[in-house]
Image 1 (cartoon, rainbow, N blue to C red):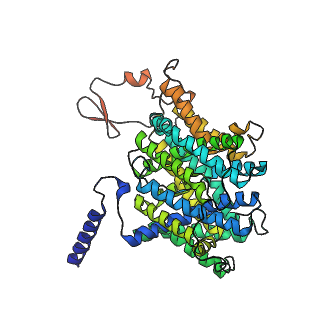
Image 2 (image 1 turned 180 degrees about the vertical axis):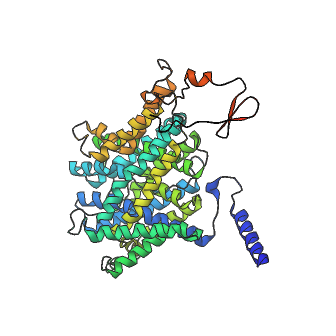
Image 3 (image 1 turned 90 degrees about the vertical axis):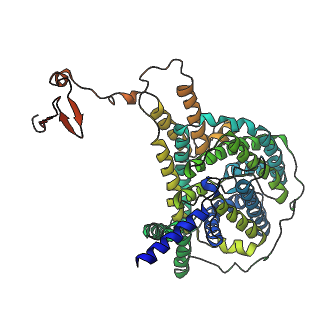
Length: 504
């Protein structure tokens, strides 16, 4: 028996050594092919609801037919897959080589709808994305130089806010995803989401590491089977429509270029650059990888290049998906090649609409049940980062408190900025951007601009310093010391400590 155990241990050791990346970077680890695609598919399921939502909303706003909206969705999957591969595999000057999933940025949805309603049509949306992304590509060196302004007090705040701002997405999914549906927020929908969450937790508790790491994927499969058994899942439309379809370049006509639309989209690009910078730093923190200005610059350039080319294949701005950062945290799978496999699956889904319809048939409450754990994990990762911050004799606690509070305003009151100028509302309507801007500015104000700082700046510092009274000191002799919870005198004898409890 001992020999068998030793042999198994040796095999595990050899397997671990074989998978260990030669570069020493956790994200360069290569897993067996089967595991790579299984974990990659888990990433696809996690972000699928998010990547199909923008084309659904924009297509409906443009008055497109169901068939045209289907083409938009397939195009977004196709482009998102290639953008993910570029970001994770990388080529010179493009790609952070971190486990980041790319897809259509939700930050631009309201702006794109406004462009469509303004009479520009979908062609004006595509034109504005191309020009604004080219400008974004040109200014990425500026964004890549701000790494010194992202210490743990800033990164922890932003990561925490990313998780918190995603919770409404999970809640909406759990309720059904469509607020106009009759069963929206029904007990059945929320119950299915709760069952999925319970399965995630149960599988995470099981001692088998492989099952625990695949808990999200397995929970989604089990949740879908529960939905089938209870009549809450519908796969009847999977066979309708084309089986294979390649995205036709400029399928909706040549792009048009309108100045107002371009300016509006440029603001969206600035928001996207800010959020992607935060996601790159967040995933670097989670994987334990070094993230410097060069790596941020490569990641942002990949973002912008993908966004420039995206409209050619009838898609929109691309950015990193925060929910998949949470999946990296909860599974502990840090390999970028797993995410590359997810990108390849997205490309295939874009070429095979029938497979996309299968994934789309996964009930939204199932995604919501998994999302509660995923997005909460992102917030927990941020809290873990904030635990490394020094809070004594500085204003770091105020920086964290103010920034998180600022980031929560758009979540607590979605219409808070509706009467502000459009450019301002576009930036600060995103809780992530709000928290990032505030955290960076306050960190510069209090921790970089030292002039005017007092010794004990924060009101929260009061009372945190230890104080010993003169009466306590008077009873001590020279050479007395405190060791292991005991008071030892200069001769090495323990001095009894009398409790004062109950005397008052």
